[in-house]
Length: 428
Image (cartoon, rainbow, N blue to C red; front, side, top):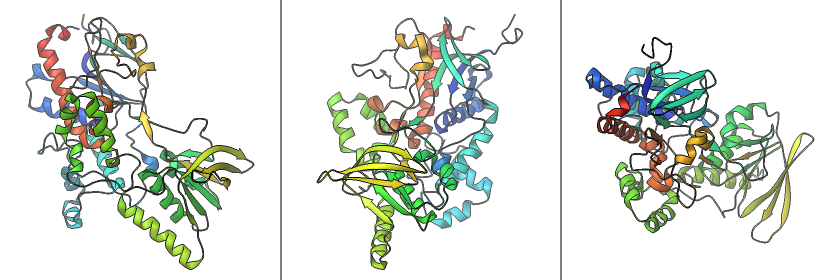
């Protein structure tokens, strides 16, 4: 009796956990492969997403903010320039292709790119099961079992595309007045005539939050607090940007560890804790103009560290200290926004007992092959792939939006290669 006759799912070639841009790009790669493949060569893939619909950084879809990657680095074009899932196809479908060309830019707004991602996700709705929260991944001999709160899905390969988790400083907890930047547009509308708002952080998100709050609440003082002396501009020069080329992933992967460390140190200012120069100049212009008019609302507290946060009746007290002379100060604010970044979501709770079969390095980080497959001991025959959390092995670009199309194609190629090389994996 077949698995379908027993009322079970088949053993899928691929089960993707999460359906953000990374696994969406993989789903598109599978879709395009299947369209051209013989029935025997097709890949059976299903994706599980805990959210009820496609969502991507909705709390930071600020009007006017633009993408920091070219529209050509979409979900498919870098892998297949003729793809019907590319950004150009999206523009044509929306009736804006000519208008976008006349716009003379490589960088769409964040709102438009989110609309593109949503459009692509809707075209792939048949491949995803929304509202499915994965709670465990278990080994079951020649396949894996992926447990959700509603049942179990079986797979020969599992691809983790669980995204990033917001980071807050140690000792800081979210509340109605203490936010992470990812919550900005969800929380800000609840503010009623704020008098002072504090933003902590020195990167692009911090600068965008500062600019948004300053523009949205014209009577509020907005204090930007960061340990640097000032915002640092992102290095987006052509040669430095080669660190984001698909080929840079393989070059980084095969480099010696000391070279990897140096390259990460050299090129952190292409992506981390840096701000677009245009936004830096706009914030400086606003701050200077307020000095001219004698109504300073935008305050930059550089070389300053946050030492504590305490909520009081109707306010939040943000304790800060100057790193230059040690002077302490308390900023009494209506809300404080921590634009303190993200970290790869920890998949170890999902792996459970499987985790002891995964090889880790001396830092406790997973050892990952060039094809993004986690190295395991001989007890695990199925593939565990990572879409993210591979910066230590594959470099800066490996986990960024700019590489999702190519990475999805590489993971698909790995699945196909292993299926052909190990026929027993075909057995249900």
